[in-house]
Image (cartoon, helix red, strand yellow):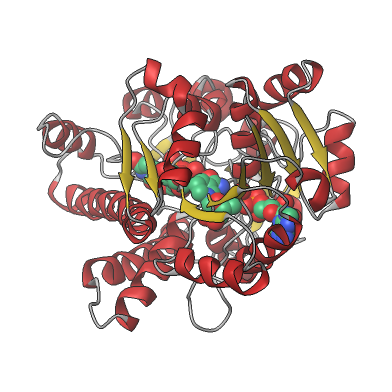
Amino acid sequence: MRIAMIGAGYVGLVSGACFAEFGVDVTVMDVDPDKIAGLHAGRMPIYEPGLEKLVAENVRDGRLTFTTDLATAVKGADAVFLAVGTPTRRGDGHADLSYVYAAAEQVAKAAEGPLVIVTKSTVPVGTGREVQEIVRRVRPDAKISVASNPEFLREGSAIGDFMRPDRVVIGVDDDFALATLKRLYRPLYLIETPVLAVSIESAELIKYAANAFLAVKITFINEIANLCEKVGADVHDVARGMGLDGRIGRKFLHPGPGYGGSCFPKDTLALARTAQDAGSPVRLVETTIAVNDGRKAEMAERILAALGPDPKGKRVGVLGVTFKPETDDMRDAPSLVILPALVAAGVEVVAYDPQPAHARQALPAAIDFTGTALAAAEGADAVVVLTEWNEFRALSPDRLKAAMKGGIVLDLRNVWDPVAMRAAGITYSSIGRP
Ligand code: NAD
Ligand code: UDX
């Protein structure tokens, strides 16, 4: 089989490489010539564990190619996946579908034989129908089906998530599209992955409902963590005790500074707007958005309060600024709210992140970046953990304390053991733990 992937971002590049690994002939197309030139030279536009190797192997074996030319990508393809961005539209919080519609129109115009246009981007319910309209308008002559195949991978574990998903969701309304997608995902039948064939509308909504549910779950445990702090309970014990109930589940009950990333913030907002427009608001999601936004500001206040009555001129070492570990993605990272608030209060911020490629550009220029965690702690009045990169877990509390000027540590991801930190003379606080 042969497919084209439109968009060489976090989803397009990973999905394209993984489909190639399944034995499919894949061309990844992007309008960004620098991205494509880099990929031709073996340079990944993003940091994702295992991606460089997977791409190199599939390029070497001739199953994976890159182009900026849409016609080259679409030629001979059985399916063309749209994996372009759907960011928040300025002003109203809806998903901006201009990239999806532009790509759909270009693909339809370039189509030769029968093919399926598959929306892999996260798109609001109704988008698939609109894509069908576009296709009918520009190519009434062509046999082009439209399908929805939302992607559930997480950054940082994207390859494993794609290769061993909990489920594959296929939204279709014709047999040609269903058969094409089933053939593409055939390797997953061997590992008994559930494949749900549903309507296009249901597939589109499954993606938003799943993301929103996870965002609610995180926000719930964050509020329980606040309560734990007030009443002397340990949020990890509470989460474990809750999560062992199979109806609740243990995952996504880790408290932190508020969820971020390229999906949850924009997708919860887009779902809330879609639901409002449909006259059926999802108030739980609206509240989750407000609580999560507030939490990031509260974290900045918490850090400032720990610095004492006059934080001006104090030095804070920040460990981790990406929205989660094992990615270089800064989109909607909690650091984008927390660190500017510290800078605005006159705090001197020194940061370290193992993958800082996009961090400097995204954060205020006043923030200094160092090359190691200990260098960020050097001479600091306080150290703050914003992202739970594994290497932070291995830092010795004694060495951390020796590097610092003061002894305050705010661990907003609970990576360290409170007992060991206090034994090293550190004034340690974390989230939802006594
Ligand atoms: P991204 O911004 O990393 O990549 C999008 C790419 O599309 C860019 O490289 C851009 O140059 C390219 N592009 C835009 N218009 C184009 C066009 N007309 N033709 C060719 N290329 C074009 O975005 P992403 O993070 O990969 O997200 C893509 C979609 O997948 C979004 O809808 C997102 O919500 C969804 N999604 C993302 C994740 C994730 O973890 N990032 C997970 C699941 C779903
Ligand atoms: C998410 C969804 O998990 C994935 O299915 C979807 O395809 C894209 O959006 P991603 O944003 O890559 O994936 O990472 P995820 O691991 O879900 O984390 C999102 C945010 O929630 C991060 O800021 C993370 O720190 C936070 N989080 C996650 C918590 O605070 N606690 C948790 O228990 C889990």
